Amino acid sequence: MTDLGELVRERAGAEWCLFLDRDGVINRRISGGYVLRREELTFVPGALEALATLSGWAPHVVVVTNQQGVGKGLMSDSDLDTVHARMLDATSAAGAVIDAVLSCPHLASAGCECRKPRPGLASAWLAEHPTCAAHLSVMVGDSASDIAMARLLAAETGGCRAIGVGGVAGADLGYRSLAHLGEALPTYLEGASR
Ligand SMILES: [Mg+2]
Ligand SMILES: [Zn+2]
Image (cartoon, rainbow, N blue to C red; front, side, top):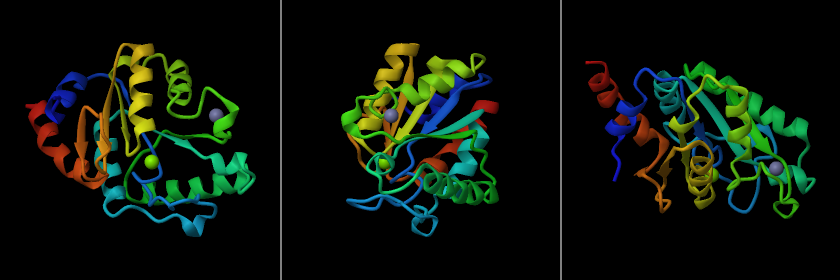
């Protein structure tokens, strides 16, 4: 079992990217549905503060999210942009720096390369950022597809750690929520700089 201190030590001084799932990690998941409008976006308690802490650690932070509601015609690309604009307003007000929010709008049946568990969104971002050490990527998610994406990305890049939140199985390490991860991190950051 990996510990967070080991993840921090492995990445000290390197340029790398923290990939994050959105629904259930940053904002509350709407069970059986989708966040269609900006008013429906509510943050998981402590997530914004945690994002500020995490973006002080990770040189790059990129959100990767499946938004099949677009493919189903329940929302448009511009509705999704509006939701993400509200999310980014709130994260930047909290002091977090998010490089990009990347979405797969396709139906699960489309068989695209960008819908998690496929790692297409993350691999495309890494290809555009060649100075980033792809094998030092970290993925944080609350679903089996997020953990599977980390494994598939690792197969392409030579490495990617998976941090689970909310009890998802199979991750390298797990926290109850993003807030708990954010609270655990500072101790290790201090250790790494000594
Ligand atoms: Mg999720
Ligand atoms: Zn897709």
